[in-house]
Length: 325
Image (cartoon, rainbow, N blue to C red; front, side, top):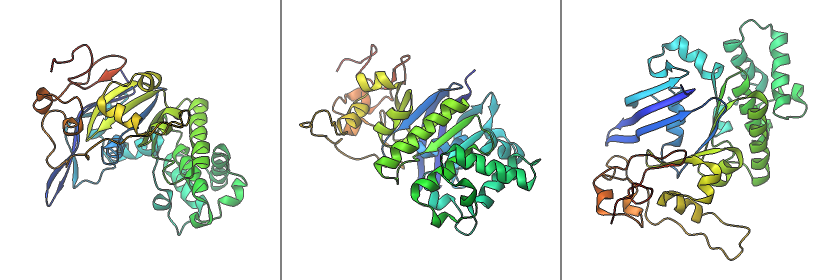
């Protein structure tokens, strides 16, 4: 049994203009100790998938239409409020995308970190909680950790705030760390430091990692397995080396072709024509077929199945099962 199992997960948002099919039949299994990267364009459902693990999508309007999400065999969708509180932070820690949004501007860093400890380490005294906060800030390589506890979020730089969020995510001693685009708002130098920090913590603490990004370079630097999403579906799932060396799905190839290659100065990145579909009324069959250079008639009518191991792809045009044009 895998540590995390997501089976045929379908998530929808109900609004005034109709239902938006954010996730449509997601199947994903993550083993203990794996580092898995989720990549795709903005709006493909990466963050919605991560939030579904902790049931953080707002309900209503969001709701799981069908499917199952399990952690170590336990059904997350059936958990009561008390079990969810233990899961959030105590079992699965989450690093959110924007620290400015998720750090309260009117409370000190120390007070916010202590709230997490009170929820998951209720037996600690105030002095012990403060010592634990200093230890956590030290673990994410923040200098003068003791003095930082008495400062407010606006007094810290973007990179420092992101490290505080990582420290908070680790406060409950979770087994799984979910990082939702933790480097998006940072410059490239700080991005590299944050990625190195996350990789080091995962290795030292034996964590299972789910890292979400729209940047294949970021994912490739931190993860050994990459899952490519498009318009609420998984189109490719492969070991990182195999995906970069021999991408199978036309969408994955398009993402890689759009990346600049510093080793080849003459290389000109190329974009993927078209735009992501309206998820209120997604295309029939393969959701990528309106933008796909390999699209055939079967792509417009039949949805491809994700298959192949360890390099899985959902495409009618590639693989041993490819359909003749």
